Each structure stands twice: as structure tokens, then as C-alpha cells.
Image 1: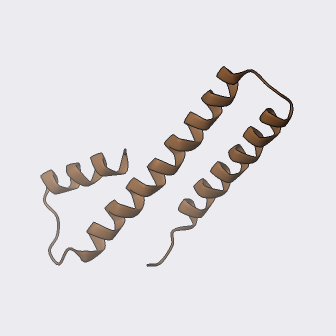
Image 2: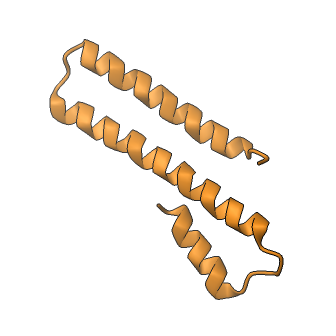
Length: 79
């Protein structure tokens, strides 16, 4: 699978967020703040997963997708 540089950038951003969470925990920051940041990381990773799945489906299709299929792929990307 060829990797879109945008996906790598998103993962690097999530990696940075995780390092920030580690720092927050080391500094004994408020639990709610840590959970908020972890939720953001989780959403980011899920988004990348959706983008990868949608791209994989698109590449495997032999015909041009109709509008309904394109709409479904966009929904998958929002996972």
C-alpha cells in the first residue's frame, strides 16, 4: 500500500499528542485534562484508520464508483 504523506503527518501529530499526555501524567495533571487529550488521540487514530480503509476500497474497485458509493466511502473516512 502506497502511503499518503498526509496520513503520516496525522500519525506524527497523534504521536506528539501521546507524548504530551505522558508529560501531563508525569506532572500529575488533572484526570479530566488527561482523558480529554487521550480522547483526541483516539479520534485522530480512528480517523486515520477510516482513511486507510476507504482508500483501500477505492483502489480495489474496478469501475468508477457511483455517487452513493462515494458517499459511503466518505462516511467510512469519518470513523
